Length: 424
Image (tube, rainbow, N blue to C red):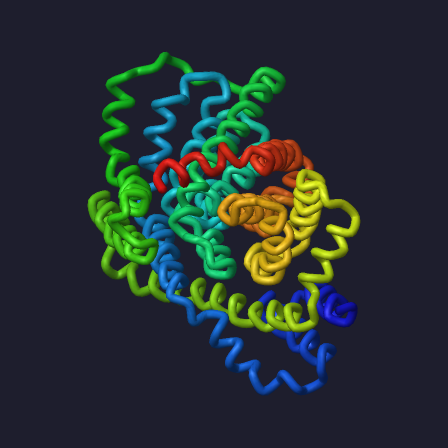
């Protein structure tokens, strides 16, 4: 196992693509376990990593994101949210969070949300007098709502790995996503007073809000269709993804900002993004299988249980490990490697598999906004031109809010499981 860790760390340091990092580390783990004995089944294990029906919804959700990204949706959403809350002090900051929550329910990916919000909201907020680094950090923090509020490709991957219901995970993500957005809103309220954020002139105008709502309605209906279809039992996750693609095409053509000639490029981007996810899943299956053969999950579980048998302490230890993992490892890679480890540990002490999956996914997702390897931080920095060091300085309070909410939810299973249990 030590040699595998060394190979994994070295590969990450030299900048090797994460899929090949996992593959090389997995082959090393198999070799250290029993020489060349297991090498004959590597190709089979690569195929097994992606030969899962539940993964068929991934390209549909990615395609929906590509269409919505180029379909003129964001400006309509911003216009509606600005009319709704823009009149209060710090209104644009609230707009950033609210629009990110809606985009999260459409795109399902943090980096996609960060790219859109960084390109659109940062210039707007900077023009109104908001500190540039603060706006970049806010966009980054809001972007991690993308994989939390369903639909979420992260939830799909976890459900596939842990054999947990995708529908249950999607439903379980609604309340934590709203609570996390509410936590950001509380922080913005405090910051608005402390930093004297600008307040737009004029008062709340119901007519303007209603008009902008109608303008944004086609975009707002997409998450309603997706979640309503899944929660009502009308669609499977894969079918909901296909319906979401159709709905996003309708919205794009309705706004007249999507052209037929744009679709081939969107298809290519979808294929590339899907291939990247599937490569990580395939190569990740090698290292996951190798660790299982070598007894690594059982060793970690027995070690922690040897320190304590208290359920609450075990959950706290797991949360600390999840936080560290999220800071240094890509979210998909972390899911592939560590899902079996923490599943055996936390479900073994009585945690519901859906509750565990929600907390594990959210903790890993928070790592996307956490230095030193927070991928969404780099995306925001590249999109906006804001120095990474400035973003890192401003992001920590938002990370603190996210961690506080998630740790609280880890010890409040009734909050997380309320909707899944209610809907059955």
